[in-house]
Image (cartoon, rainbow, N blue to C red; front, side, top):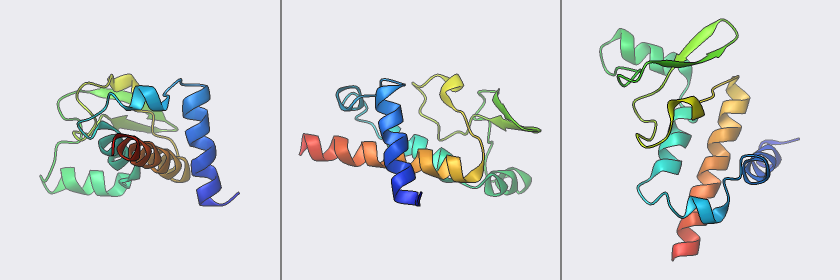
Length: 115
C-alpha cells in the first residue's frame, strides 16, 4: 500500500472507529487539526535537538503521556491546548506520517466545506 492509500485508510479509520467525523471536524476552527498534524509529522530527532539547543520545551509544560517501545514521548507544545494529552499517540515514523497526512486531509476537507 502506498502513502496516499495509507493516509486515506487512516482517515476512514478516524471517522469509523474514533468517530472524528467531518461534522466534528467543523468545530476545530483554530487550526487544531493542522497543529496535531505538525506534531505527528515532526521527526523525533528534531524535537530532541530543539531541547538540546534550548529552542523549545517539548513537553509544553504538559508532562509525559505516551510510551512507544523504549521511548517516552512528551506532549509537544504545538499539540492543541483544548485536546486531551492522552490523544497524543506517537508510534513509528511511517505511522506518525500517515496520521499527520490524515489530519491534514481532515483540515483540507473542513476548509473546503466552509468555503
